[in-house]
Every structure is written in structure tokens, then in C-alpha cells.
Length: 475
Image (tube, rainbow, N blue to C red; front, top):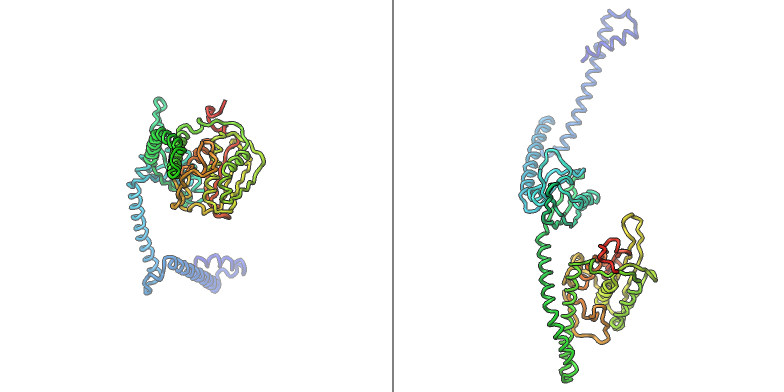
């Protein structure tokens, strides 16, 4: 290194002292020594850098786990060998996990940041008919599975970086432009899981059997309700006829019998109403313009005998008038059921809040809506059961018991049943959901952060006729 550096240094010395010293041995020796010194300095500096880098690498790999008597170079080679073995073990574990997922009974697929399908297991390939489960050249997932709901689930998972879930229906069609064949619809529940590098894994649950069992159950319940309707009506007529003719000592028993018959009749009526709503939904509505605040006041007055007895107050916050298109009988049933439910679970001398606001939408394609809220001060819903409160026969309180009999002064609602005996078997909120969804609206339940009581929110479009089939509109 010294002679190679000595030449440019010698040239520099020549340019400085002049060409007269070109043959001077002292100058040549001086240039050689200067080049040698510079080269040794660079060599020492490079060795220090390598030593520092070795130290950093050993700290990264964990020097404390290596034998102390080895040199740094030997320790580095040993650490690299350990890391290679560890990497091989991880690759073996990853291969085992992939093999387990591949043969698992649930469907799984994985996409990259651009929604290209990276890999899916056999169940996912079978369930949503993916031709190439492990493509060598990744293709867009939408090319393999024509489901925009699945795409939206993936985008929501990637954006929120949290586990997301979504339920939807796929109507697969055989890709034959000449003879397209529509296959059986799939009811899917998807669970999106965020992964590193903006990748997303999706677990798919086939809910076809669950839906079919629910449909069979509903058909069976509807058939039984139809069979019970006629004999219950006959029993009620006979009971009402003999109520005034029996001995006074037996009259309480007849009244109790009549109350139970009325309860069963109301239950049958609710089941049949639910069945009609599920089958025809919007087609069974008779839409017309009505004033929502007046309907709320009317429903509250029909429950006044109960509220007076429990000393429950009613506060309304909202506009004096708000017109919307709705089925008056159905919407009255919604308000009455929600108010009745709030009264039952509110303590005495408490207040039930009702709020109504009109939401103006500035988004094209989304209509204006009425937002209706009912807040009570009761025990609220169990946090683990909030997603089930709108299911049939759900009862939030295991100790809840229906009140038999027919309280004096109770005013029948639009369906002919008394508020105190109606919907005491867990059908009230189920009917509410069916009616609201038939109006193209949404309903949700939670516990209010201030009162800790139940908080039911209903959103109804002002003009649902724009969202529903034309057969739902009245002449």
C-alpha cells in the first residue's frame, strides 16, 4: 500500500520542491515513508470499523448466548449458523401451519396490499370456487370471487387495522356466456384479520345450514300458529260469554283463564305478523304521509294508565312536526313496542326520554331520514347479549315473568292487544326490527352512557318509496 500511495505523494513533492530533486534518494525515501504511514492509518481505521460492526452484529444476535472464549469472528459465524437453523425451524413451523389450514374445515384466503390473492386453502377454493388456490402470478381477488362485499370487508380491515366481520349472500353464476347457470345462494360470514405489510387474511364461515334451520323453524312456528289461531279464538269467545254467568267466587279463575287466552292469542298474532313481514316485507306495507311526532304522542297516551301507576314521566325532544312516508299501523306498533318495553324496565318515578331529529344527507343517492331514540333508566341490556336483543324469543332478564290477566284501564293497541300483555315472550323487539327493515330503515340497541339504561335508535328514510318496490306503495 505504501509504494502505491508513494507515487502520487512523490509527484506532489515534485510539484512543490521542483524537478531538481527527482533523483534525490532522500526525497524518494520520504515519499515512501509518507505513503506507508497513510496506508497503515487507513488499514487501522478499517479494522476499527470492522470490529465495531462485529460488535453490533454480535449484540444483535445475542453475544451472551455464545461461548466467551471464542474470537469475535468465530462468534459471528456461530451466531449466523444458529440463525439459519432458527430460520429453518420457523419455515418448518410455517409449512406445518399452512398444511393444517389447507386441510382445515373452515375457509381461509389471504391477499396482499393490492388485493391480489396470495393463497387460500382447499375449503375456500371449494366454497367460493377459486380455480387456482396458490397462483404463481397473483391475480386480483375480484377476478376469482365476484363479491364486492368481500372486497369491502378486506378494505375495512386494512383501513381500521382491526378485526372486522360482515355477513352477506353470494349468488354464484357459472361463467358460461351462452348457458349461464345460477347455483345455490351462499350465506357467508366473513372475518377479516389485519396482517403485516398491509396484507389481510379472511376466514369465511358457511352459514347456509344455519339459515336453512332458521327458515325451517320459522315455517314450523308459523304453521303451528295458524293451527292455534282458530281454537284460541273459540276458547276466548266461550270464556268471555261465561265470564258474566259464573258464580262470583269462580269469577277470578275465569278472569285468569281469559287473561291467559288473550296472552296466547296475542302470541299467535305476533308470530303470524312476523311470518307475513318476513315473507312479503315491503310489499305488505301501506305507505302514506303521516306526522311522526303526533304518532309518538298517540302511542304514549295509550300507555298512560301504566305510566300513571308507575309515576313515569315522558320527555320529548324534537320538532313539533316531521312528516314521512310510512305504514301508520306498523309504525305505531314500533313506537308502542319500544315505549312499552322501556316502561316495563324503568323504575318508578323515573323519566323516559324520546328524541326525534331529521338528518339531512349531503351524499348523492342517500335520502334524508328521521332518527328516533328512546332512552330509559332501567338496568339496560347485558353487554354480551346486545347483538341478540332483536332475535325471536330473546329475553334480556332471565327473571322476567309475564303478567297474566288483563289490567283494568289498559287501552288496546292497533293490533287489538293490551300493552301489558302484548309481546311478553320476547317478540316485541323482533317485530320492531322486521317493521323497520321493511321500511328500508335500521334499528340498533345499546346502553346509554349517562343513564345506563336501554338506548334504542331507529333510523327511517323520509321517503322509503324511493328505496322499496313500487308494489309497496298504496294507491
